Length: 143
Image (cartoon, rainbow, N blue to C red; front, side, top):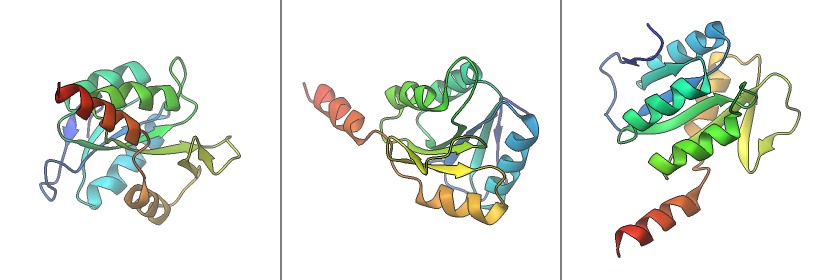
């Protein structure tokens, strides 16, 4: 596996892509491997700026963002807002070793360290973080 690329075991549909973003390369790799075993195509980034570029380039197939809530430079929630501009129905899952609340703006926070089953369950249940973005985009495209 390599950072910045699309990884797949050929088990998933193109619409089941996930972008994993974490400043810790080991956590990013661990999460990516787990999600690969579940049939996701995995994009991986170790910083928010790289994640924005990858998210924009793969917006058509991106289904889920798994991101550390406390990324440097651009926080996980701000990154999610940026990517929602490209993919309004993007599902979001935040991870954090320090954040103590169960959600951020209604989006679940998976506490680190987590085990594979916790990540799989949380990824499966991750909600659309910005359903209003899709309504705005649909309204603009009908004009």
